[in-house]
Amino acid sequence: MALSTREAYGQALEALGHKYPFIVLDADLSKATKTDIFAGSFPKRFFNIGIAECDMMSTAAGIASCGNTVFTSTFAIFAAGRAYEQIRNSIAYTGLNVKVAATHGGVLIGEDGGSHQAIEDIALMRVLPGMTVLVPCDEVSTEMLVELAINTDGPVYLRFGRFPSPPVYGDKGISFTQGGANVVGEGEDVAIFAVGDMVAAAMQARAALLEEDISAAVIDLYCVKPLNEGLIAQWATHTKAVVTAEDHSVIGGIGSAVAEVIAENGGTKLIRVGIRDTFGRSGKPLDLARHFGLTSAHIAAACRDALTGR
Amino acid sequence: MSEKELRALAVWAYRIRRLSLEGICAAGCGHPGGSLSCAELLAYLYFHEMRLDPANPQKNDRDRLVLSKGHAAPAYYAALALRGYFAKGEMRNLRQLSSMLQGHPDMRKIPGVDMSTGSLGQGLSVANGMSLAARVAGIDYRVYCIMGDGETQEGQVWEAVMTAAHYKLSNVTVFLDQNGLQIDGPVSEVMNNAPYDEKFTAFDWHVIPINGNNLAEIDTAVQEAKREDSRPTAIICRTIKGKGISFMEEQCSWHGAAPSSEQAIAAFAELDAILAELEVAK
Image 1 (cartoon, each protein chain N blue to C red):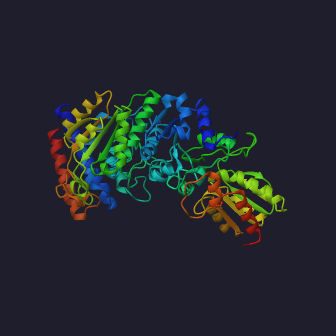
Image 2: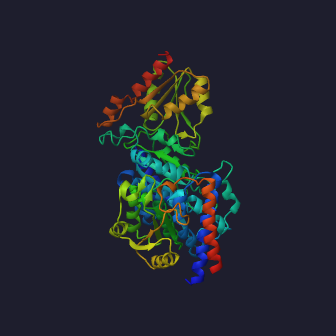
Image 3: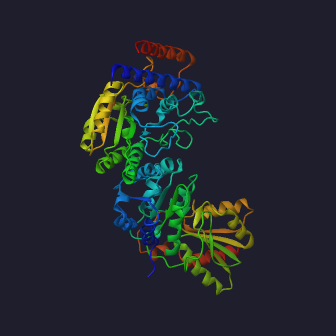
């Protein structure tokens, strides 16, 4: 049974805790963010700050200022949203080694509903100078990206989902680097850039399109910042169209990031698959995916539309 | 402390005031009121109490200060310069593009600054973090945090107050610079949040009210705070905003404005007169 990226995070954090001396903070959500696994093994390196996310972020900065690496976890909406300015002024402006590891990103978190479904966190974090933004899509990429975060100097934002994610990477052979992106499916007609849960959905879309003789490449854009602009420009030049897919608003996330690069490099047809500037709502993940246009069928349709220039 | 030691520190406080004013006048902007009210606190910390080495600003076991009321940067920089972290002459370049001296403290650019501040309400959280780092590393240093009374309107301050008490951070000492004024008027009129003593006590802190411009009282309070082994301490400092320059004292309007050239001449004359008196008495 596939793990969710948040569960993979919790396990990776504990495993890496034996190798690296970092410290972990949570804001009363450690059972959900899975930092409780680390806390169980390393109680002296874990501090619960309670329901006080702003306090947590600045406290993390204080710990980091003394030469430590710190992970802070809560839900994406509270991390990037509520504590935005603390991240901005205590962590990004100072360039400290704080890794904001936020779980429950996107509408596909399900029944908690709109107040909790973060559709804007990638946008908020990617606009901060010096912030590295990493979005794992499965268990393997989660393990690799959590360790990459530890070995990346300065602030990092990691975004995890809630429900189990089908595996995208078979083993740990592929490399993950700051500023990197991985081609997980080759193709020539259309390039799909995706993050998180949408990577697996994009692979399904690719399989469906192959039956229609449409060759779609899928690129896991796991490092949203710093963005691999050269790679994006190259794919835009060598295919006939580009599609982006994310469980996030089409405003400000990877859709916008890719659009920025394409526009500066001469332009090509782009269609952004994502949340179309609306808040989330309660529902089962599968129902929400259909409701908000986040299924592989939607991605495939976007590819067809992009190729016919609609 | 002896009378002689106290007077020596009083001299440092007024040198801090004078150098702050030089910076603010050269820049044509800055925050005199809140810089002047905490000059005694900074003098006490940098010239008597804190274990520091200007030649080694990143020394791991140093005592630390978080100037949570970051707009008092001119006084902070003056203290750091006088203490030997950088040349006093740099104060003439305060807030200029070419200078390392930013409008609010910047730990990346200025040696001696332990944390970047300026956005009110975050400093105590940071101080708590420094204290937790000491605990994890098994090192013994103290963490001081200077905050403003207006600043405690920020809810995050009280989150941090909870955290410090919960984790028994007895090496954290807050100085609340209670000068009674904020930008839009007296604190009591804009958003009253007194009494401070009872509030901190209710949050399980040790509380010591003092005259924050009186060095002997600062000394007694800090030494008392150091004897606490299970609670953080809040030293509630009644101070005078703009202290040391007669026309700036107790005025909201001097929160964030530089004096005119005429006013500056008068201000320097006052400070120099006090310094002369203090030096003679030494």
